[in-house]
Image (tube, rainbow, N blue to C red):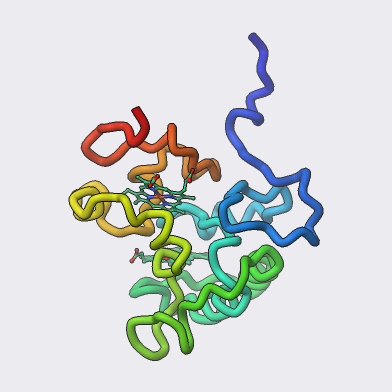
Length: 168
Ligand code: HEC
Ligand code: HEC
């Protein structure tokens, strides 16, 4: 069969008008994502769905790339601006983390893995799975969501780090 390959690879939100507030549960990738987003922000971890942080959070992340969660992720200013515009333009509702929110310490960078949404979605995931050596950190979405890099988080695609399927 000759299924168009792209359909299998990317879950794209191209049918949504940009003005529609995207729910955090729709983690489809955006057809208009600048190639630089995947290239520059998808090498150390996956290029996170922009819907999972608020606009202010993304501004903070993109303004501090030289001090990026203990790493240096600095970019050329033009590229930085292109990516920042994309993230801010597709941000979700204010995430309640970061300044004044649930951050561990003042000035700490916002984490989509510290939002109430993330906690709620994962409250049934056993502690042993989080501390498995293949996971290392909650932001390692692909350790359990086999198609995270393609923007897909369906339950039937979840394989825990010890190899067991979440849904069986
Ligand atoms: C040089 C490697 C590197 C690059 C390049 C990089 N990051 Fe990161 N990023 C990290 C590390 C390390 C962490 C911390 C991971 C952890 O503790 O779970 C992180 C964490 C994050 C988090 C918080 C994840 C969480 O725990 O909720 C966000 C958001 C983020 N990065 C966005 C970006 C964006 C946007 C870009 C591109 C501009 C980018 N990163 C490029 C290394 C990188
Ligand atoms: C340790 C494994 C693990 C990691 C790491 C992980 N998840 Fe999950 N995630 C799960 C499991 C298991 C579920 C299903 C929980 C349930 O149904 O109660 C889930 C559920 C979800 C759901 C809801 C899916 C649905 O159909 O309702 C989303 C969305 C999601 N995770 C996104 C993420 C993102 C984004 C990251 C990384 C920032 C991430 N997860 C990291 C294991 C993980």
